[in-house]
Image (tube, rainbow, N blue to C red; front, side):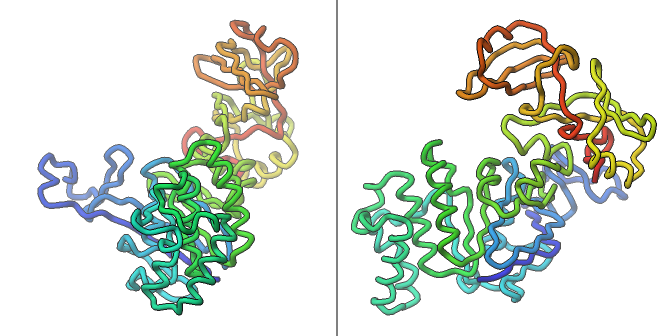
Length: 394
């Protein structure tokens, strides 16, 4: 229905009167432009929640903004919706600059975490409300509500009040209320976070089905990287108001741009080890106590193209890519966690926690309290700079 373009979008929350009594926002010297307090960037203007946000969302694309709490993803979504004023930059929807356009005139719809249903109205009345306000003909309202209810499998609940519905059913109603408007852009702000694990799985599947049945552009916010990986055409990983990486879920998983993305995407999270990047006879090796591994050919090519020098690095290996071997990285198994077809071995390696995923074959409990060795393939090694924390391949 519409492409969405965010150009150098910025959000600053101004300093409130009286909030500077303790000198939180006072500059240390006249030449200092900005500093950080915790994870917040502080400037003369105030607290910077989102900065240098650039994103081109294609027509009918499903984009997911993902990151930890406080990273600016919901603030970005609310700026697209018009619920937050844009401090800087330009926002285009369907080719039109909408910075100063009222939310009701942006042709967008939003689904909130809290459902936001009117408790005194029936499901049908909740879904039809926005259309009645716009004075749509009754026949058209009924048609749109019935079509949306059929898509979401809530036709049987149309005459019930929200209090008579489960959490998953209420969220379906909230989504139905949004899609009856045929919006150019459908915004979703952590819509599944109030549901239990089983319902979240079901609703993820429902949203995937919904996406195939309605022609609109989706912008979805979540802190749950599983939702991001399963729903998005592309995902935008954010931290402290800045974009860390924009790519397909598979690209982000296989080629994280930096240490933060590597640790945030993936369950359980990636293991990290102190290591050295070595160059021997024109080939790159990663070395950590107990093991030296030649990197895969495609990694060799990328490192050579960037003329990466031998240096101390942070080595990242995902739990599923570590294997138990006769020699290699040494560590002690503290806990064995049975997960069905696999088992998670929680280990201590060089004083740090690590996780290894092994198949559930035989007596996996025998490893608990034992010292074992781990190895890995050179195709599964991720090499990060100690100084910048960036992936040295890119």
